Amino acid sequence: MDSFFTLSLDGLQRLLVGAGFEKFRAKQVFDAVYKNRVFDPQNIPTIPQKLKDWLGGNLEFAAAKLVGNRESEDETKKYLFALSDGYFVESVLLEAPSDDGRTRKTLCISTQVGCACGCKFCASAMHGFIRNLSAGEIVAQALPFVKEEAGNGKTERKFEFENIVVMGMGEPLINCDNLMKALEVFNAPDKFAFGARRITVSTCGIADKLSKLAEDKFPFRLAISLHGATDEVRGRIMPINKKFPLATLLDAAEKFAESNGRMITLEYILIKDVNDSFAQAHALAKIAKRLHAHVNLIPYNRVEALPWKRSDLGRRAAFAKVLKDAKVSYTLRREKGAEIDAACGQLALKKRESEK
Ligand code: SAH
Image (tube, rainbow, N blue to C red; front, side):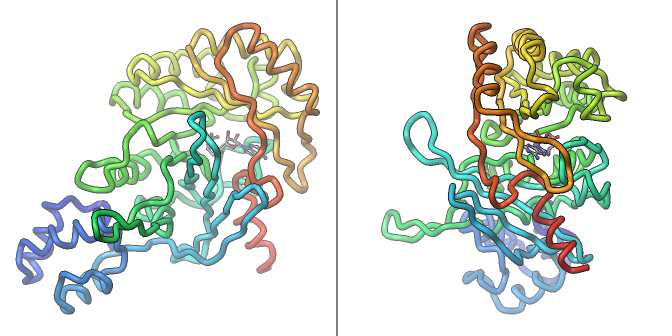
């Protein structure tokens, strides 16, 4: 079944007219879904029953169904979605205070079942690649997070989150066509109208795709999972570094930054005795300065069955100090959701193992 969400208003009009409905019904349905955030056609009050049934029978609204969630003490919530072929993906809702003292919610979504990139520290990589998610399945991970708000004498339905990060399971730039279709649904002014600067896509460094996105004027924010500041160290933990070594990746990133105009984020998980030396910190500072990038230092989340450990607190602080002294913009993140295995891939993995 085709996804409702990837249809334009024109496309929906044509479909409805072809099925014998009036043309103006398409705008009613569009408004109900994108303005009032009603995602079950049976609950759209303005349309006749016959159209509700036709929509439900001919277009897919919830391509992934929420089947479970877990919450950790730090307010990180993790959600498990079932796909129509029996696989699972997950999304995470993170809550964090921002600079202005307000609490902001960020939704983290997946783009693939499993992952082909094989980063040695990552849980998603352990079972290899299974398949790409469709655009509808990517969008569906956002749909349960709607809240009702009273205003101007009526109740409005809005998304609970203010930012979207594409940092769940999978490598988004390997599923680029479906990713772009899904981001269009979030971003288009006549769809969810979610600002491009509130959407961040994270990649392990698919350099040729980055160059292509630079040419296409990709409007969203970019994060690069660096995790090693020399080929020697990065190559040890990220096999993708063989195909796209740092020199190639950084050239592409530079080109991307120029075309995109927003500051790139370099993600760097600190893994004990692997990538947390002073030499790595200095090399990272140099890369960050070249790209005018912001560095996000993240403590490693332990993955059962993998040998890696998080760097000690003192080491993390010393590493950060090198960046500070080099006047690099950085944040030293406290871990989020460690106790509910918020590191990518772990929840879907456990579910599948317990079913065996
Ligand atoms: N494939 C994309 C997006 C998914 S991973 C990418 O590589 O960027 C999202 C982030 O989580 C990446 O920076 C990834 O390296 C990181 N990550 C993976 N396993 C982790 C773990 N166990 N602890 C902390 N971060 C982890």
